Image (cartoon, rainbow, N blue to C red; front, side, top):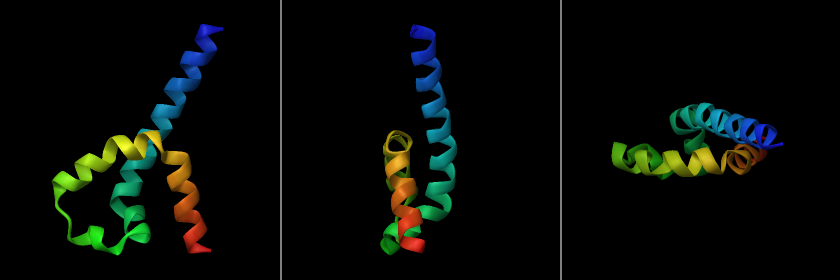
Length: 66
């Protein structure tokens, strides 16, 4: 039972890491246009949040494009 939980948790974080790379390169501009002028330090602060909240951020970015 613990193996299933750990596998699910690791899969969630792996998908979060993959999503955060693409989100910080392209998707964050669709939420806030002022991020284009921000520095690298601000984007480094967004990495943990985008890894943990990737399902919500995916929903927000796809919702705004429609």
